[in-house]
Amino acid sequence: MIVGQQKPFEEIWGMVKDHKQLTVFGCNTCVAVCQQGGNKEAEILASLLRMRATQEGLDMDIKSGGIERQCEHPFFESAKDLLDRSEAVLSMACGIGVQFIASKYMTTPVYPALNTTFLGDVQTDWHFTEKCQACGDCILGITGGVCPVSRCAKRLFNGPCGGSAKGKCEISKDLDCAWQLVVDRLEALGKLDDYEKLAPIKDWSKDRAGGPRSFKLEDF
Amino acid sequence: MELKTKSKLEKVFKSGQLAVTSECGPPRSSDPEHIIKKGHIIKNHVDAINITDNQTSVTRLCSLASCIHLKLEGMEPVLQMVVRDRNRIALQSDILGAASFGINNMLCLSGDHQSFGDHPKAQNVFDLDSMQLIQTVRHMRDEGKFLGGEEIKVPPNLFVGAAANPFADPFKIRVPRLAKKIAAGAEFIQTQCVYNLEKFELWMKGVVERGLHEKVFIMPGITPMRSVGMAKYMARAVPGMDVPEELIKRLSGVPKEKQAEEGITIAVEAIQRLREVKGVAGFHIMAIEWEDKVPEIVERAGLYPRPKFD
Image (cartoon, rainbow over all chains, first blue to last red; front, side):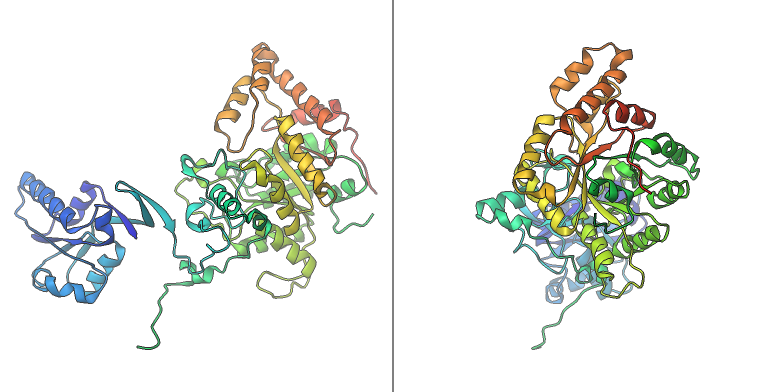
């Protein structure tokens, strides 16, 4: 799941305050789970912006709306009228949704209400943690199902480093050392001997480093 | 003796004598005098001098340039390289650069996380890890090829070291991790500062049981404490450090003005005890911003004079 966090209100206000009309537009899938960018959060943010506009004595028409996903064309059907009539859009989606709107509405300014923070899981209703960096060449099969690319602060393929202490990372006592988790898992699987296998040097061309990535389904 | 490089450090090890290295941290300035001066203070008491690479992620005069300064003064530097700041293109380029100046030794490291330093907002690279940097430099030297596969007309001829921290967790993989570094190509090991002698000896026991001490030269790291404050700070704030409570008590029991002297004595005693441990091939004395004490430690520990070769 993509996890995002709302930007500070002042930063959002600074982006949108000069518009006469604004649509705060929710994305009701990933970023709704982390309660930052769903349609409900869009309504709340729109109210806060209206209050601020009133305080500043500004005449702003602020609407709210939303769809299930801002990253696929079909979902936009239901919001066509709303977006067609918008002077500017404050998207509550991750960076993908913001760009999707920007590409669909060439002359409409679109602003991000969220910082897209990571690809992660839902530990509890209020705790989300990073688990994947989409590096394009998954090695979870050799690391006991624990990803060192996203979970080790130094993304070591042959960790842990010398800073691993009592199961925690050198950068924070609140952060598990990914390589402690790898070792624990290998041990639980009866494969601790695999620890001594040197991990091959990574092909980062499949990562962001190789340029923007895409793929096409050949059958279509 | 069969030597693979022109490294003086390799010669000392392979002549069967205990080797001694020390290290100097470059200045946060473009003036090289500071590091040259430090080198001259210790050069007669050590076989080689490590130059740190932006240690604790604080930006400094680069390790390679500092090594060149020492080399030009007739000293034997050990180029420390961290994989935090450079990708495989830059790392291999710097290895060639070092070899072109006749630098004979390097130490392959991960590097402290940048959040500890003066540029916590920096990107980190970690294209390779320290294990893979060892593989890379050995590949360049022994196969005469770049990682990309192209031939190197005149390969770099470096003696390759790595670090080990017997005190980091999980302890059960600390010996296997050393085995992994040896498999990657490490020829000598400098360890994290050793204060917990029992734990170090336990680690060495595991190392010897697997015969790893016959495949790599192991140098325990020795850092004298200047004060009880330093000991407490290292125990509390330095990643991967194991400072036993007894050591802090011992320093606390000495008047403030005598603590530095006591710190030196503790370091000397550690060397005297550890030199008897099977598999210990030398000592890496890291007197942090206290280089002028290195000669005294080396002499008092009975490691002076240093071997000379024609």
